[in-house]
Length: 179
Image 1 (cartoon, helix red, strand yellow):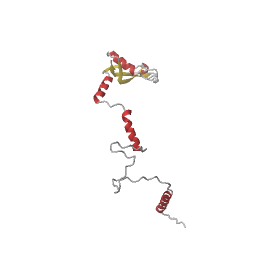
Image 2: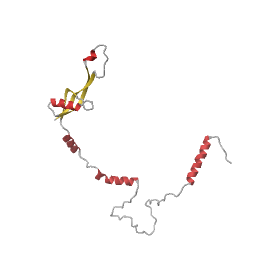
Image 3: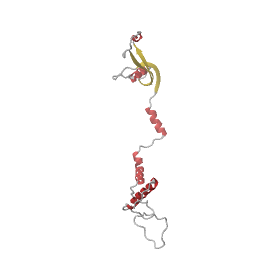
Image 4: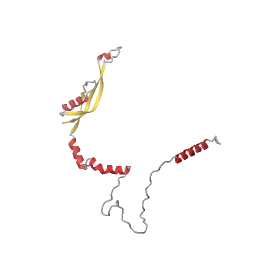
């Protein structure tokens, strides 16, 4: 005879117990267990020769191939010196950086950025022109400014402003110049 309880806690406990019994009863073959490790205690009696896999005291211990995560990480760390580039000293690093760095100077001025083929302002050309006017070869834009330039038609009272009456001009105002 099956007894039904209205209490949800009793129903939950019954369901949990049934699931636990199913899991425990459905257990198949288990994993093989190895012998417990020896803690340095040996039985008294005749001493037998060590098994052939035991290393001799003068040779390094043989490494077992254990396919676990720790073993794989150990293999990775063994390969690291050949994978990574050699580490440089701080003075070597500074010497490399100083060879790569070119001497540069910041200049100020105001040169208009011409429109590129897609209509956007090309401020690299303007930075080059600004630097060339100061005696340098090329430059990179550091600061730019924009201004709206309108025709005199916008000043006529009562006239509606049209989209092509004004345009925005961009100017390079400072650049980093190099020889």
